[in-house]
Image (tube, rainbow, N blue to C red; front, side, top):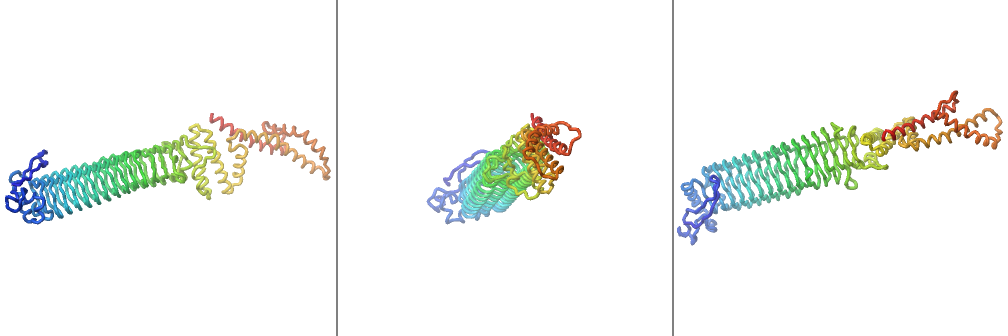
Length: 588
């Protein structure tokens, strides 16, 4: 009797059982001085393949007769001829625990109708299970595939386990169907791992898996799936994947490029505490709330044309980040909205509220944030908190009713579009002026009047430039006078100074001018006593000053042309003083 003994785990009875080989030893058969049989001797199989095949058939028959199952425990099996032993359909439970398959293993198109255990099995050559069908529980736990493993178009109808297995070559699970729970936890894929077009109808678990080669999950369908603590050393492709259940990418590390192109996340998805290098979520769709606030991005992050159907949360981004054309159907929270290398929100649509906290801050020197042509459906629910507007381009974005809370401002403040855009067209100037207007109104609502005054001056300067560029000379002159007299109504001191200059300088000078004109017209002889004229002017100076006061503050009966001129100028001065006082008093 062969001396080989071991134990195996019975998948039906859910317990460990002892196994003792029922075959005669090679010594008993007179073939070799060995206490092991033909299938358990570590060397005999190398030169006696036919005998090993016959003994495997005998072992199969004996174990079925005695225990109702195939027990190939610890056997040395010629992989190329295993079909010859098992047949195309295996009616009994089959256990290959701790066996070694030598050469290429061909189990393609074989149907296993009962539980199958390949626990701790070694496949020395290529393992081909393509189009095989496993009707009951299948266990490849701790198996080692030394070369290529092919499970293409294979069907697993019950729970399937690959825990702690090791795939040293390329692995192909394309178009495979897993109908029940599937567990690949702690598996190592050294080569290409291809799961394209696979279907996982129940839970799939890839926890703590190491993908050392490229990974292809294109057009795979998942129900509930977990990649908790998985590591992707090379490129990973999840394009056109449907995640129908809860999806877990917690503490995952994508070291190279990962693609989620046209991918659908239909239930809750979590990327908490993951590290993602060169992420692309282009044209994907998130049906439920998604939180990227605890994700560390590097390289690049692209969320181009993504649809966020529920609340979305983001935080700091180290790389340049693209959100071009994306749509946020519910609240979008960027807290904090730190984009160190810049971001692009061009033509994004926010249908719900949006919060941008500290956006524009802590950026690299030449980086900026493009928020041009962004559309806010509910602008009253959009807030920019502690933003640095010098680093954000907002042209062609409707900012009416958007709130700007505690932005970084000073007297020399200029928004990005004014500083870096070449405002060659009048329409561009008007658009930039509108940006200042909306920011100013928000600050006035927050009672930050001094900062609002700075923005008012910027707005008026641009409108003056717009008037001059469009050759509206009257408006252009009016804006320049408005700025000179009272700094666009922001300076009470300026308005008062203008009135003082009017009364004490302009009015007497106009009086002097009128006297000169009168003398010239009344006398054809230009013989003027200069000394007498100066004495007359000095004596009349204060009367002209008083006349300027009267023209400025009261109505003068029977006014002369000079009075009318002075009154018009006075009205302009008083109007500026009134506007400056009103702006100041309204802010109290």
